[in-house]
Figure (cartoon, rainbow, N blue to C red):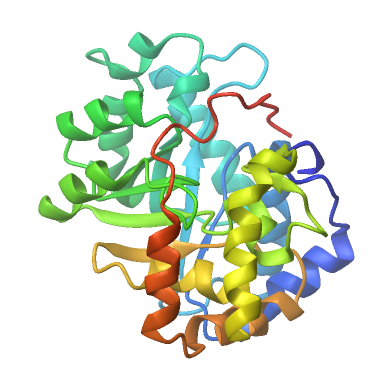
Length: 295
């Protein structure tokens, strides 16, 4: 997804990364119909076929997406998107299926109205094609009302509960009270908290100037002072919340898997969290000014 992350991953590296994921302790992988315009699911499907099927107990998550040319996301598109995903992945059903990015569809009413995309999503669960269903999107102002109205099993929110931003906090409280599994994605704010502001000067997928990078650099300074990797701090911030069932991180090369697992168990003293708390955070939509591109 070079338009989103600023770099590409070739087929060989993707294959090695996926095999390392399936060979390791990770038991959940999240993708989507439109990630890489289908390339993500195809690569994952190739890896699954190469292994003779999903490992036992492995949770694969994918998403229903709008038609990328027209923006259509009605009930018919739900079925079409699912069939595209199952064909690419080479499976008959999906453990966890989300409706994805309704804020970017052509008409929200196609999604929320009676007989619309959400009704069709829950039909897929009733039919056993999806074992669980969720809502995955960014804009909290649209997401939270939808979440209140439906009995979702799970949700995915990205970039809105990180060291830099807590826009999803109230929504997470609501979801936790209803026993909706919270999958918190992008704890590295699009990668900058993992790779560093000097290497990847982008915040939430956008090139960032010194003003926008200032909070990142403040976190980095604390990490240098205490000899802690910023990635470990960012990851554990999400993991230590009792509300969050799983933290979803992007992985684009095999060695990142071992590194991420090490970050998850790194020792972080309380004084570090106290210093982080003193920095404060933003609660506004982190993508309000984003130049959105799907690829």
